[in-house]
Image (cartoon, rainbow, N blue to C red; front, top):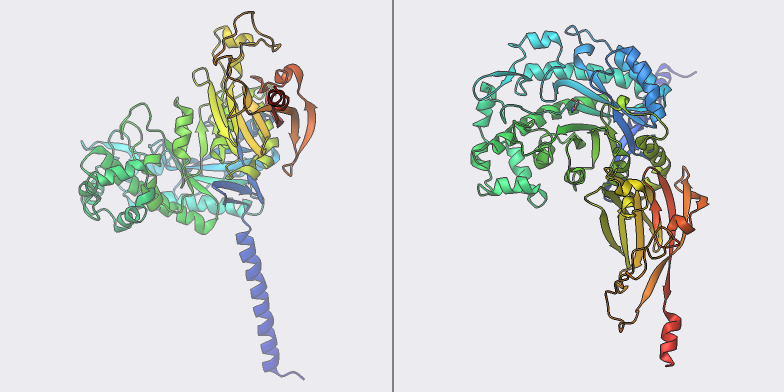
Length: 593
Ligand code: DGJ
């Protein structure tokens, strides 16, 4: 008979094995994240359910997820529009209407409706700050201004902006955020409908560049934190140029007060304020990570239209403050721009940085967003785009955004394979910026707005040109994918000597007789190889990133082999094969002359 001690040992062993198996399973479970960020070459990709995922999104208007009926009626429309992701506010005031009492009805409804309509969700925590202000803080918080103090202007005016320097503010905000996120994790960890979380919304100080409360003033007059000073020294070579300039302007000091290290102006006030917003957000992000490991980001209102800090929300997660935000909030995965101003290509270039992937959580809803989406994926390996107040958009199958998202959804597996590998260019044209020339291998590739071909009445009748744009993806030498809308592309050898030919009509014949202008003399003979279009096929991309033939586009559709084009209003994916030909017979003839 087995003695008690053996039995005990056996049982203990069994218990250990059970605990071990359980912990392996738990670790596996925790690690089996449904949504994560991964590097591929120079790109950072959002990976969802094991596959790279491009957010073809839309953000709801601020009050559109504040009642279950609205959520119920809006989400099916978003599915008809072809979105794969919806960005939805999580409102602190409705989640914690009474202090310590939580109501997750709206969150539950959002997740259920998203699943029913095949959508992923990015939640926006409208907590202590929304567009600088604290309008989404619950009533009990707002009225208890002594416990939850406000930020002050230099003149002593209290603002409806909770103070980032108050521990009470942080504790209240973070407790609600954590309780809410625990709930999200509990109901969604396995399914993974929620794929990212935005902490707060457009953080920033208004009226003045920084908070002038007593607590803020004391810290402003103290030394710049040592971790920031050592970050600047360690990362000197890769600092944002504006950060470097500001630091060098005072002699790159290694310590001192904010004004000693960076100079006495409102831009230093902004740095100081950004540091403290970032520290606050970092603590939120750490709470989030301890509950649910999911990508986290912050969004920024732009410092556009020549506005100064305080005229725009000062100290938000803006590109020129990226070093402060990175050092202060290392748990935040990316800083994201909200784009409502002109100059789209310049803005996006500012946010695709060596240390920041591009994600556009908000952009003004316009028909141009369809081609802009192509541009950012091709040019900047972007993670996604999301027009604001999306429920107001059209769900007609002919609307440009619907067509664009439909095409991009199909294109996604091929596009994702190429992100970060330097094989793609994004194209975007409007009436002012009509042309881009790309030199690649031995080719000169001239890309233009489709309306540079004057054949469509809208090109010349005074209409404002819709933007044209797309992606030029190199599969192999002389083999390309061209996708998008409203573009025309010509391929030549870069070495071809440029004998300018006459303007051609749609049929490819001279537009009118006798107008040819010879640019080089008759004595100069043709030299070198030429590039021809072998074939242009419209293709369909399959789920594994391979593509299959739909139809050949030849004759009038490729200008008898002169160019590749996609008309304004159409979205297509084209497979282009080029070939090379030379003046063999001519050289041969001359050789025997
Ligand atoms: C940017 C904000 O982030 C949104 O919540 C909304 O207020 C829009 N501006 C309105 O244009």
